Image: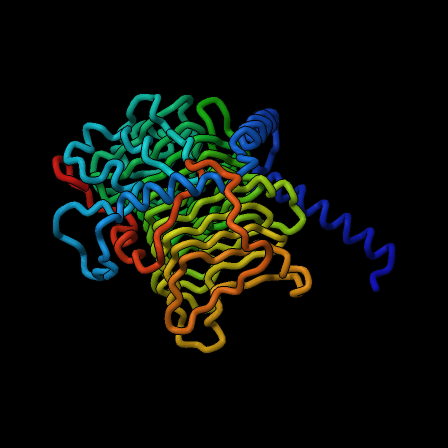
Length: 437
């Protein structure tokens, strides 16, 4: 039994921890960041769907249309060199158009799932990054990615050529931006990662993000008219913090110091799709604290991704919110695939789970910090999943198929036997101007 004074001290420590988490890497939470945080909180509340399961219906219809008439379930492990194959409804929206480079902003019409309202920089001009350097974080050089992402207003950012960008400090992206790497091999590597903090309406597409390390912090320009003090960054590939309407599509990620993708502190309306994840321990974290109940508004779609070689756990690891994990291919894990605490709702539909040889790691799921008497009430559903090599999913809670979300929010699924076809083009694509992507 914990003494009253000890309980009081634990409460103080928890409060201090949450305050520190709320400010994240912001060394000076000044008026600029207070205003940005307040705006982000309002945007997240607006983006939150009180009836999330309705979102699945339209995605199910789109998937059914895409796969009708085909029973091809084989994964081609070699680099595909044939005609354009748009094998899921998001890709079908744009990929087979040979004029995609002349109509880049069509991409913004293609997102499904909880991030379906995201248009990124569609309403703004183009900005072409032609300089891979990141040598001045206080006064970013025009033509660099850092200069592009801090500009005011909507912006559609592209790249003039192949480039490897080593970020000297975390890249702090402002609202209403699209980072579109189609047509170039763009690597963010061997430096700091990408931070989406208190922003709305961001698309990240086609990047290769790997070997990300912690940033040392210091004074960093985070807007055209603001420079702020930052503490050390965590070493995430992509950090989503207090942000809404985010779409991450066709990225390839591996070997980051912390997580590949973390979404925390009331982030919501997020879709992560068509991506390829390899060689990492903690893959995705959705909700950073069992004590931060504001993450109840978190709604995330994870669709058409390939969780591949060298992964250990957290694909994803969830707290509090509602998570739709649909038509992904889980070919490797060492500990578990999907986990959580603090009663998240997890709907797993049409995924393929191939368990590792270890007899103690066959279970897809993992509940943390709660006995069965508690977690048995959490809603974790498995529908149409394909279990291979002894994999098994422990369901719990209400198994009735409710549909409180809109058709736009919830991507409808096909049976797990179709997954290899639907995810065969996951990760960053080799797109060439004048040819289907």
